[in-house]
Amino acid sequence: MARTDFRTPRLYVEAPLAEGAEVKLDPQQTNYLLNVLRLGADASVLLFNGRDGEFTSALAATSRKGASLIVGRRTRPQEAPPDVDYLFAPLKHARLDYMAQKAVEMGARRLRPLITRRTQIARVNLERLRANAIEACEQCGVIWAPEVAAPETLEKTLARWPPERLIVFCDEEAPQASPLDALGEVSAEHGVGLLVGPEGGFDDDERAAILAGPRVLRLSLGPRILRADTAAVAALALIQATLGDWPKGRRGRGP
Ligand code: SAM
Image (tube, rainbow, N blue to C red; front, side, top):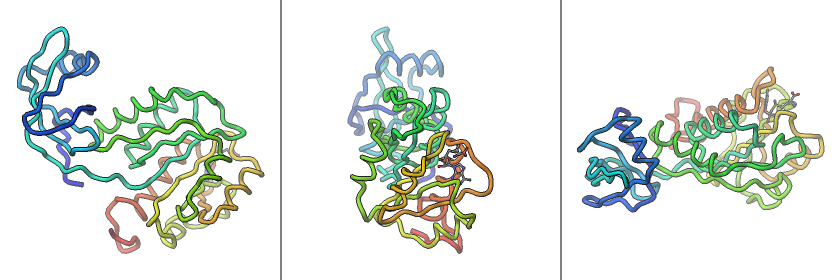
């Protein structure tokens, strides 16, 4: 990933991006630039849409109907995100917002809410989840648009899981062992699914169904019971440090 300019405001837009194009902003984006960031005419804004890379842009016409930006040069080519699915049991609002943001900052490409027997909430506000994910991209320099899937039962997800695709199953009942060593012995050439359970954990039948999968790495995250959102950040850090897009040292196998 090319070095990111973290000083200039960044904005996700749906529109195609090419030098000289005019991008019209919706009222929410206009309000954000004009009233929250208090930007004036010609102010610089970095744009990305998840397809064309990142571009400079300058704030042009501003009217009550909405502002527009004139697209400048491309600053970063489009990058493919690490092929990491984050499979999680949805939590209550504020913590779900937090989880979505942290998962994106830690490089998850897809957010996949799972309905398990002890999931606290079955209905997920996908628009809110997606808005939190996009806001995290704008803040942390990601230029792809994370996919947010509709909730699915654990059973259905396991039944449709590609056999060659690794599942990293965070299990507080796993034997204590080094997660770095465990992750250092598997390959993620067909991508990774990180599986974290609900606050009540998985029940025995669910645990057995998960462990019956063809490529499942049962991962201990140490001797303490972590909250589901803490476990997600810890596990994503371990995955990115060994299999993902964090720089590799002597232990990891560099890209
Ligand atoms: N069954 C737990 C208990 O006894 O309180 C509750 C589950 S924990 C709050 C939520 C999820 O975080 C677990 O399902 C697991 O995926 C993950 N997790 C928490 N602590 C962990 C640990 N030490 N090792 C591996 N995974 C952990």
